[in-house]
Image 1 (cartoon, one colour):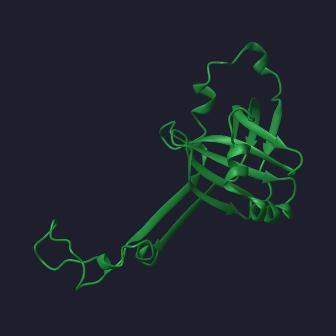
Image 2: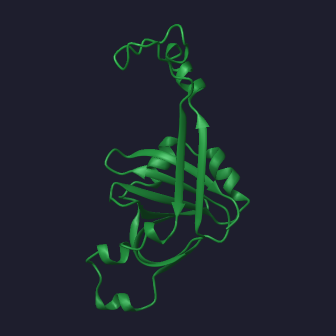
Length: 179
């Protein structure tokens, strides 16, 4: 996949990585950050040293620069499914999974309980996430017809993070190993 347009970009020299912000999904509420280390061996170090505070600073709009960028990303789709039973039980909801202790009478007078709760997630990295970007920014001028200021080529393993922009909540992350 490739795209050409104005994207928020951050280059962090001391961490030896670059961060690209891409629109994600059908609304402007989500974005995908692609965190690309200088080489694939550094990805492990980036993940190990990452913290919420560090990520928040890296993706802060005041530190990112909107640059005319040619982006090359592999297309990918990742589907995952996992049981939430153990997680929700540990958070204080064990009774809902117990057939003798569950109290779901507001739903049905029968003795209902939840046998399991499965969380499904799909992350799609394709043109649909970026195709509207070049038309959404009205800051294009004549000099934009020149070569892009930056080239962002994800041709090695990278970290991706989905953020809900209005709440600044990071809702999903993953590592793409084989571009």
